[in-house]
Image (spheres, rainbow, N blue to C red):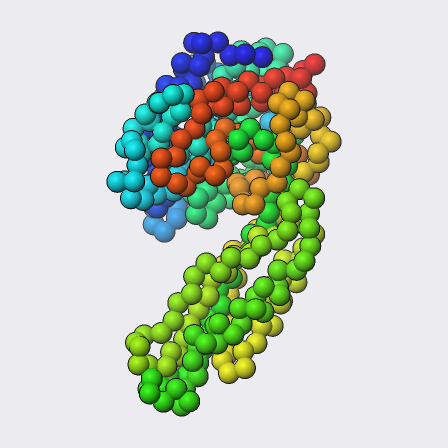
Amino acid sequence: MEISNAQKEKLIYILKKLIQIPTENPPGKTEEVVNFLINEVFREEEGFHNEVITHMKNGVELHNLVTKIGSGKKKIVLSGHFDVVPVGDQTKWSYPPFSAKIVDGKIYGRGSADMKGGITSLIGIMQILSTNADFMEDYELIFLGTADEEAAMSGSFTLSERGYVDDAHLLIVAEPTDLNIGIAEKGLLWGLLKIYGKSAHGSMPSEGLNAIEGALEIIPQLYDCVEDRVNKILGKPTLNIGTIKGGTKINVVPDYAQLEVDFRLIPEQSHENIINKLKSIKSKYCKIEVDILKDSPALETDLNHFFIQNLGKITKSEYIGLSYATDAVNYVSSNKSLPFVIFGPGNPTNIHNENEWASLEQVFQATEFLTEALLETFID
């Protein structure tokens, strides 16, 4: 199917407005975006039912939006997050990061690709299908717009806890995949390793236990935790040592150091085993303590699901796995039999960078492809 020029202009207007409303996380405030969608996009008089779900994080009230339309008993969930990563150094941007400047078919701005372009495509689906009487009679479309995906995913956790996906038939998350079809994502395991030594004068290091040297000593053991396994979609698990901290002064033997480690794991791995390996790491001289900061499972959906197969035929795109986690992990953890697809406009290599942009044509195509696949799967 192909959307009209009038529909395209409407989607451009919505996307520009979404980008122009700053939702940097931190602090991650999304109330203005939610109000815009309720007042201008998902109007009650057009049959949409809106519910604002708030939750607190670090003393800040964050806003999530649940929008429903349709009278059917079968539920299809469309999900996207409102928050964006910080702009960073604005002098490195060719255009102001919240200008939504359009140049040569590209719209520039923080969050354009990750993931306000994807949210716009989901809005397009909602608006197009809301006029299809057959679809609306059999199905209910539920849009879940979340806060805090870029930090702790507390928004999708809140919506999941409240049961919004419990009996859903399909989940679509419009993260930027360059219109490839995401059917899996790696799990996440973050750990904090605390290394305790003994301080001494820097001129007499033999009198102390150097915690920084202890940290360096255990790094090979961290890589031993990764395991040599492969998933056909996601590839191999990975480890990134994200931070190392320690020491107080050049002439003092450090008595404390710490490492923060980021494992990205595949479904074939046991998180419990990885955690046990972390906690068994030893230093010859220093005491080691391990705290688990975050633990999210890997996901893999059924490639043979009718919707996923139809989307593949329509788009002729590749089936891919994502190296990073999305809001899908909270939804699928709540409803383990929930089929999902991660599909949206925007190149993943372009996100979180200065001069972030999204292709307007991809936003239109995502709307068209997903709408057509939904109709072919659930109506034809």
